[in-house]
Image 1 (cartoon, rainbow, N blue to C red):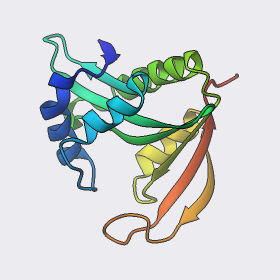
Image 2: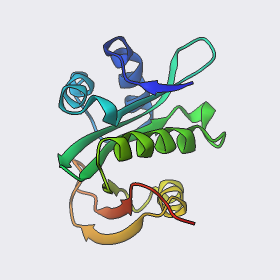
Image 3: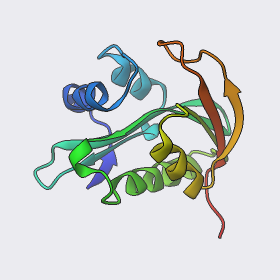
Image 4: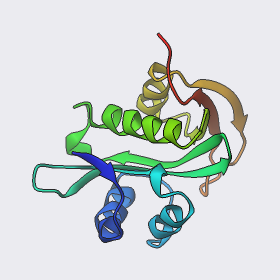
Length: 148
């Protein structure tokens, strides 16, 4: 099941972020992003309703969104869950008037880079020392909707 974020998801999403992402975030980050743009917070749940993945984004301006965090629990990867999350995010973005999406990803995260490229994102810039550990980031830009 893919749905929008609920405040009661925060603890489980934080656990997913800690186990899946290299950056450290405050637990309150989910409340913050939700307060900024509720439609930009997408959660995937298992059959029992427990979160297994999420995408958190922010609305940069009237027509642009930025993906801030995107993770799926390790044991649920390679099952189409990430694709379902980004598809729902794109639908919400279009309905919100967003036409352009941007994100940053570590160059060493080759699986994520391939995933984003399959979804129409292009590498547009290298951001030196972007991450807390001093690592560089690849800036990727993409459309809200992919045209085949």
